[in-house]
Length: 209
Ligand code: OGA
Ligand code: MN
Image 1 (cartoon, rainbow, N blue to C red):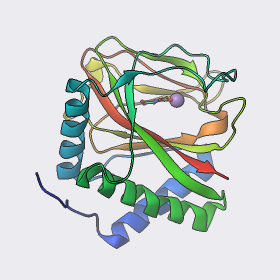
Image 2 (image 1 turned 180 degrees about the vertical axis):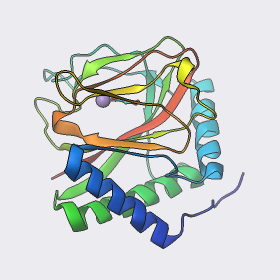
Image 3 (image 1 turned 30 degrees about the vertical axis):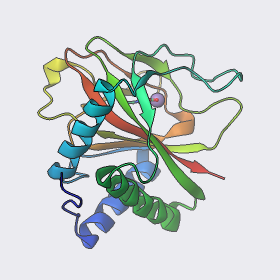
Image 4 (image 1 turned 90 degrees about the vertical axis):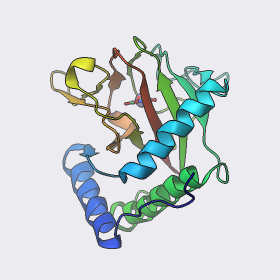
């Protein structure tokens, strides 16, 4: 198991952060095809499957605690939250997202304080109905960021993240390995369509104070 992975060059990371900021400002969402190097993506995917095989992933709930949730969608994914210090790959990913958090704060002034993320595994046929990522009793989730861990995803396999940009315009994003989808958590209704194969991701949120 490698303990360190290919790191994107500094200037490339800065270019990606700039592109994300421009997209979020212009249209409220962004999709970066090659956000993470392939070796890190493969290792994170293997770790997600290992956790699943051990039974560490649990069927996700909807909403938060006893509070009523804004997202009333039904979901069929299994999740486990990441914590620092669990593996070299997870720590590297958390470090990359920490750099992105700082870059977003330098330009977007959203006061993003932390990034929280969980592994998510959707078995074939599982989906997540249309919802919004903000809770009624906690409005700190500000930017949603989903990193996909699926090698060679084909459009006919389904599993798109469908953004509802307004009443009638939809944007489908394929969950292709190494790509990162971001959108403003407060006002982007979205859903996960069922797929014919297992669908893995690291789903997370930049949260403000
Ligand atoms: C979520 C979610 C999107 C995706 O977990 O809230 O909307 O593409 N995930 O996995
Ligand atoms: Mn969501």
